[in-house]
Image 1 (cartoon, rainbow, N blue to C red):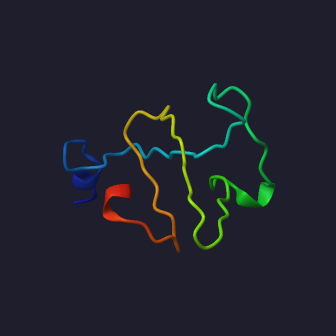
Image 2: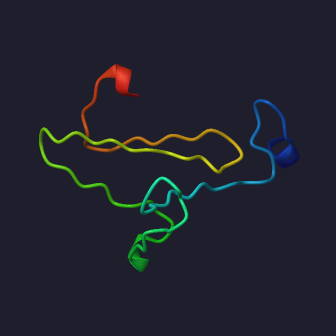
Length: 81
């Protein structure tokens, strides 16, 4: 029964679990990482904004699959998903 969940495939995760880590860099060359406090663990950088601020995030995905993020507490329009 458990072996069924360990099988790979289109609709299965398989037996290898990958994690993606979001990191912050100083510029678009992605060569110098911004240090973060130890208490963040593997969480990504903290994004701070105030009401009516515009948040723009640039991604460079080095992972083996596509990823995205969902900002909690931020309201945005459908075309910004």
